[in-house]
Length: 304
Image (cartoon, rainbow, N blue to C red):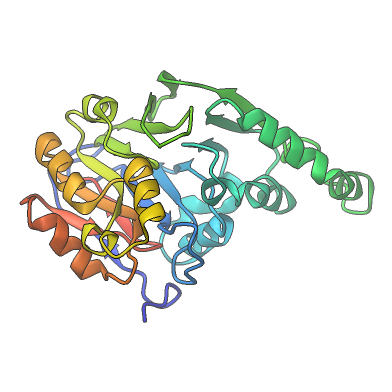
């Protein structure tokens, strides 16, 4: 069994020279959580950190996200000190992608975060955040008015509800969002990160979507959700209907990657249903010849 605390794999994929110094990559991807709604103790809920220089940008907030960031900080990446988690991009409001939001709001604040977080996501995100603040009213009062005398800003989120286009930029990174097809969800987003070393696209949850194909053209790394096509055939009919409408199979993803030709395809949010990383990769490789990895929690990826 894989144990995340002791087996911390690092995927160092050698590429060309980019960044401030030849041969030095400024960009890393840390897979903080690769899981699904299934309560797999080895896979926290969906969460990915794109790190440029010393600045982390978090995508999604599944359960366990702050503890995973702390583990990465201790073993892999000093940039993931939890008090530095100040930017988050939410793909959609499904519980497995947002159950860690209360932890993300309050734990880094308790540990010393002193500035409001910049939060980007679909319509409905502000409603969710406002109600989390309401739910923790007593905690906020005790920490700010009691003996802790905590600061009054570190638990706040400056929420930007977005639907697409360029939604954020600073001196390190530019972020675009694109609506994708996640079944009955009215708003579900993929994100594209333009970094000094190349382009990263993170699919979020999506069925095969023409909008994502157009959006991800030319990307260097495609981080994409997937389910096992082989194991799908054994699922009950109602779940087959659901997953076919909301998610992407290994066979479908192979076709998508074949069109996009990313330098690296990263599988996450894997629905195994009894498959393994190796068999999932075999399903993709049966129809796709490019470089592909099946991510686990705390994998670190540099751009090829």
